[in-house]
Length: 411
Image (tube, rainbow, N blue to C red; front, side, top):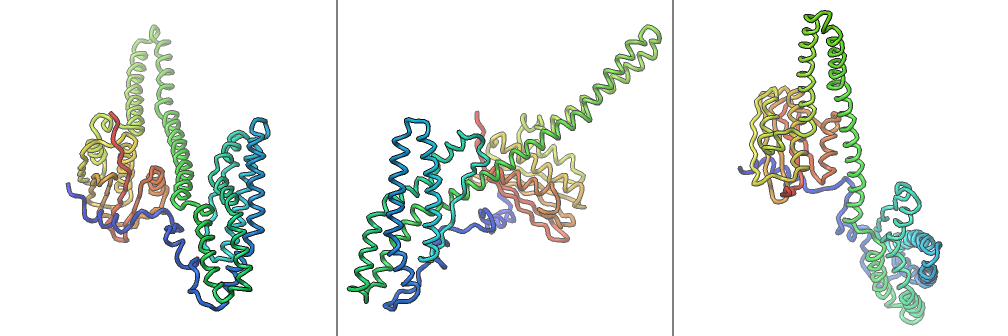
């Protein structure tokens, strides 16, 4: 099957954005943090660059002393109980020195430098996990490296600028620009967070919370369904069989009627257990795959649904399950809220992604913030690095496109 053109157009225009505030690495070096055009005049920007270069020496001396003391003391005492905690505290302090350096670069060099993600020490558990988190903090280690290598550069820039103020003052603006460009490179290389790494850390922290909340909600639903459904019927069945046993000798006809009633309760309990198991993971999905499972879901929809699946192989079980429940939830919305006369489900693979498109000719107006169902689907797909897009203008039609990462099924 050829992928529907409407889906391709939507995905081509959406892109893989990851949030309203995301900026690419190119944006960070353009615009506000690009130095203004250089000239021989001593404008305010040039004086800021000169001030930055003159401050390099005292800042570099303090940072070098801090880095050497922290590494020497912490390294020498690692054989004792206090060695690793002291080194962890030194790394946390280095984070603060890096914060001051980024602030100085923003103020005097006009750089747009983002702050790295704070360490989640409060959520890391006891003192040992906190200690380990601080010890393996890449931001702290990069800052110590920055402070350790800056002393020769600080001496060079201080002496060069101080002498040039009296001897080479006509070319000092050009000299200051060249020296501060090296400073900018150092700050970007050692003190700036990695855009991709920071973004992925934030995503994974958010996704982990979504996965935990979703699993807890599913467990509560299963527990509630068992308690209110099959368990209640089995309790009534036990009571009915107990009464039938007591009446077996006194009133055989009444006992037989009670057994018949208990037999009906058993059938209902079995049916509820089957429905519950199908809600957890349907047998048809396990046995026959996504195509047959989606056809089964479509047959229970109140409007005619055309299912088209073009998959060269079966994806991983987790991805297959998420795709199944996504389509199931969307078709339930079609039955309950759309007022549609027909619907369609298209599933296909494109490179390393599994694409799903559910379309109906109903009244439209569906929104991600319109209810917990759509929002829950978006969160569940986002937790596995997926994408969920709703296009539903008033009056219809409604087109919902979902994207999941493709992972091959293990043999």
